[in-house]
Length: 273
Image (cartoon, rainbow, N blue to C red; front, side, top):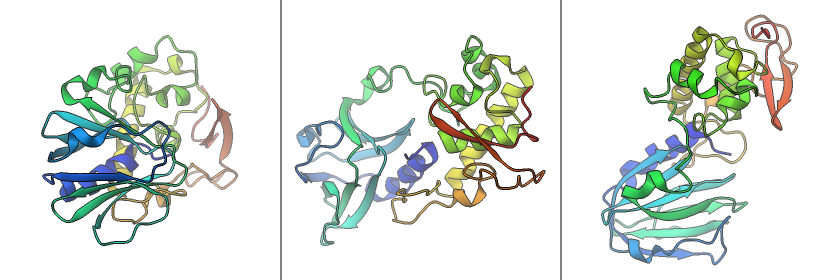
């Protein structure tokens, strides 16, 4: 599933191509995504003012004060193409603009979903009302993390993957951040010391920023808006490296399942304390 760096990469790729473009028509394949598609008619003849991200959602803000919300699900992709380009397999929604471009949504498994909301009401929307901090903003700090998990007895790995705590830190980025911070993923969330919370937050920010710079991580289906894969997978230190030597101490990387998700760590570099 695309995580925060992948969604941010898509937003960055789409922004210069469709900002300011006026939507003239919308067509679809007749197949629903995870949920039925919203009524796009109120967006016709409206220009896109900006494209942003909240958590793992893409936000298309239109000039009439409405926002189109889109989640990519497992295999969703957006592509900006010329109107005369042939339809590809699994293209389910096509947005046509006055600048001769189309924004096309492809989704092999159709787990993505979309919705409409008045822009001023986004914070109260059910998909956003209970979300935690954005990890790349200053609000996400060591003190914030400590205060948010101080009563939690789940693992720290599960805590930082909980969108009620912090958004967008998916399985890959949680494993990589914990490795850099030298924190065992199984350590109880409320048992960390203040310096560890601060260090972990620092590395979460760094890992996510590096992943965005690399265009995200392509494991199976993810591609950027230009159709190219993300390259952060080449920088993995522990994720997916079960039984391979640690790049620092050379002992084998181990795997443990936490909350039904595989976690990768080095038992020497990340000792359980």
